[in-house]
Image (cartoon, rainbow, N blue to C red; front, top):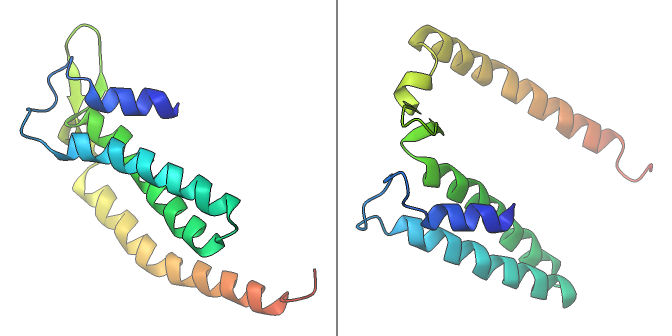
Length: 123
């Protein structure tokens, strides 16, 4: 999966990017570099560096896969593609989801913090 995403980012078969887009070349290099740093820091038991380099690896991995498909989210062999604007939900749906996010995210975060505080040192 890792190799597929890295190679997909260099693929220009569907002409998703011009050669002027530098981020398509920077992200796989960033991904491979921080994956190596993550592995070495884990072996040397530097867990804080392992944690933060792991975050960069996950972000680069997800974003490399996402940006390699831009602007066509679903690519068909016949040449008809679905873009982001065609595949997005309506404005009413997205605004309802945003309101729900602002209401429920603090509730869930407070509950998770309470559970963490309550069960600290008991397991």
